[in-house]
Image (cartoon, rainbow, N blue to C red; front, side, top):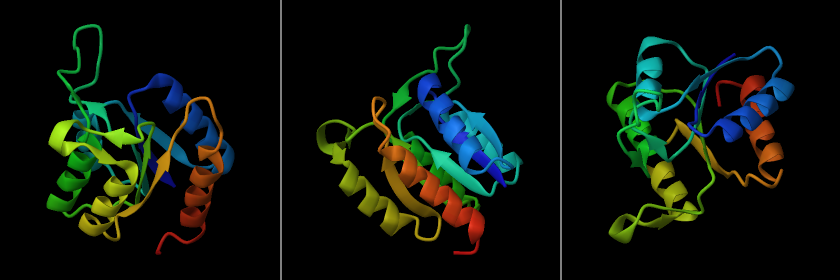
Length: 154
């Protein structure tokens, strides 16, 4: 099973990677650190599962690149690009924000879930709230991974 993890936060990425390794030891996990690198990997390679952060920089942050800007709904843009290109990868959003966006675009996690369910049925499987100091997200993510690994056609 090939899993793409789109996550710019190193600690969160390491914790999710450890959970994936313990839940699906034979899985191949590859990371993308930004909207741009996520789309490049999604378009150029085959994936069985996508773990997607919602808030991401436009480009990978590096010594020579500041990432351009942090986009609150970059994960939605990734899903939109997948839909446009007719790429269907089962996707779970893993975010550490209970509310996203600002001003008129501000929405709760529950509102985001409803919007994603309506716009991306069959691709979007659900959202997990990642709390850095807690482990409540771990069994939920392990359940998504295990269910999909056992029955990839649902």
